[in-house]
Image (cartoon, rainbow, N blue to C red; front, side, top):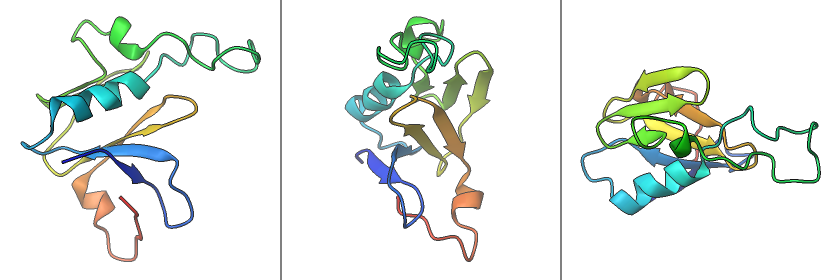
Length: 114
């Protein structure tokens, strides 16, 4: 399994990974490297620097924003349980993690581009 882009058919601004037993450590690391703390150097407070310069992994005692054990740490908010088939996505510019349940992504009429 490899990371993909996620979003509607009109946008693919999200890097995503589906929670499975076949996730590669490199893919989990790719998601972790994209998640940032939204309270550090947040635009417009520092518009000339990177939006967020401290990765969530540096602040999460569990050792990364997303784990193969099935947890997603949302910076400054807390821990979420990730079930098999759920999608973990990260918005590339802000570094914000998004969890979409396997049920929601499969709702009839929804057109996703994972």
